[in-house]
Image 1 (cartoon, rainbow, N blue to C red):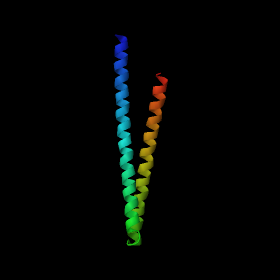
Image 2 (cartoon, rainbow, N blue to C red; image 1 turned 180 degrees about the vertical axis):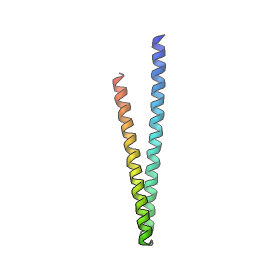
Image 3 (cartoon, one colour; image 1 turned 45 degrees about the vertical axis):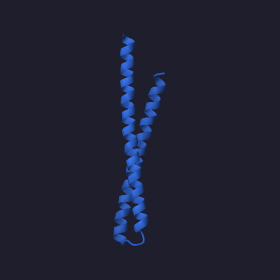
Image 4 (cartoon, helix red, strand yellow; image 1 turned 45 degrees about the horizontal axis):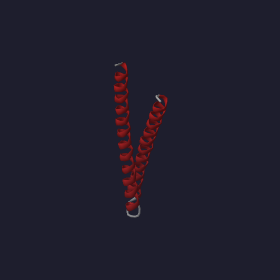
Length: 90
């Protein structure tokens, strides 16, 4: 009976980790998409924009880059933690 309870708790924990990793992966994918869209906007408008508008778009591009790096780092760290925990439980 105690073994069944441990299996249920372990299963619930694994399910929770997978859900968290899925959310982090979605956040990273969203950040990648936003970054790509900003890069495309910059590319399309670079020759026809005023210097002021181009600087504003460049600042937004930099912000999207920071968001991408942050989301990617969070996802990689969570994957690493999940790997470490699963290796420790074997």
